[in-house]
Image (cartoon, rainbow, N blue to C red; front, side):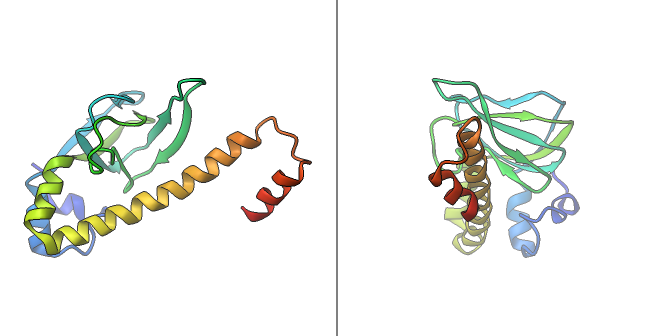
Length: 166
């Protein structure tokens, strides 16, 4: 069972009222991961959404025509596995513990049901999730640009302009 004091220190949960805490504490569980442990695999069923309490998690995407790419590094307070919240059938990437880690885990379907049943609290929760996802997508954009630039002729005018705009 999750202890409320543990979730208060994570930004995703900060400033929620007592009712919102009470709703969330009953559906989240605490999961422990060892370094290099695979939390979920790309193309596996997208069932759980995670909020990292401590440690680090690496998100890797494996395109069908190339090597796996690190698309995100999740730090304490970050989220991953949001395919489950987007009602995707499968995860689009792997999640691997980069060091010993602890995360709060919830079934995406349970959190979505809670939000539907309690629309006021649900709106707060979904807004926070949307903010975190949009921040992570910005970080992914920069990583993809780095991959594009690797081995490219950076004297090319297109690349010069992209570098100036970063």
